[in-house]
View 1: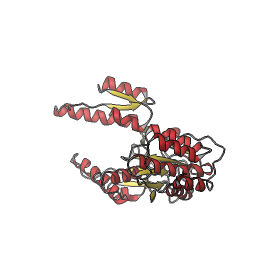
View 2: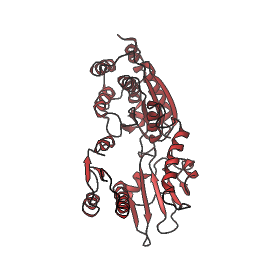
View 3: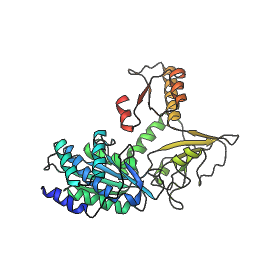
View 4: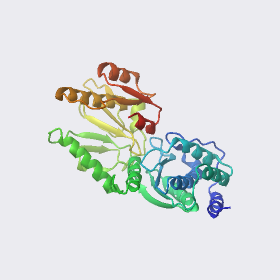
Length: 354
């Protein structure tokens, strides 16, 4: 037996699998934290194989359960250019997580993917603020090191930040500097350039619900904001965060709305989901989700193109999933007169359509 596989078999005994069926989906694996130790170890193994299969490019692993309650956790892998894990590898993830014989599944992946054990492997790890994440990073590292991979632990990051780190490293810095500071510099510079195009000075006050998660005060340098639910007093996603706001159609606890049309934004715990909301003069709640945001942006662009007389070579359009609001689709097609393309309910499936 290959020495790496022997080591994986030995270390696997320290991370016994519970009698549970796991399935890797769009959100990766996600369930109660007490059930996930073996999954974390095995995703460390898989990340190494994925890195080797991609000729030694860095693969990312995020320990997060996004908008779930704090007692839950989860894990998902990030591909070399910051994409979600290639769908064909989701099958490998589920098989490995459920395997009774870890070594046999690893052998099968190596054979199917023609993996060369001599190719070096490197994995970037990050986690959200859940207490269970600290131990899970150690379990991931056990898996990575068992197969001879190198790991770099970024500590607590937002999910988009780790995607950014992975892409930066694999593009030799062309995309940006693979540090948290580099991430904020890139985003801030792009935002400031965009705002400069408007010719306006100053900024309206924005109230931000950070869901008691990873979002922090780096935003204060570029925007006039009130940062609420910043984690200093409150539990992750408890009566706050994007999922809570959408499901309950009400402002989150901790955000005080003092006047009609106050501009409010809500994130989830790992800051990869954003919604806007406001209260009107009749105290009615209004939510601006992804469908509404997309139609507003396309409507704005369409108006400016009509005013200037410019014509884009490929035009403009909207890409939606099958779960999109039907009214937004009709509005885009019939009122804005822009094409709408549909894709599977997966983030990475939208890119080819775009």
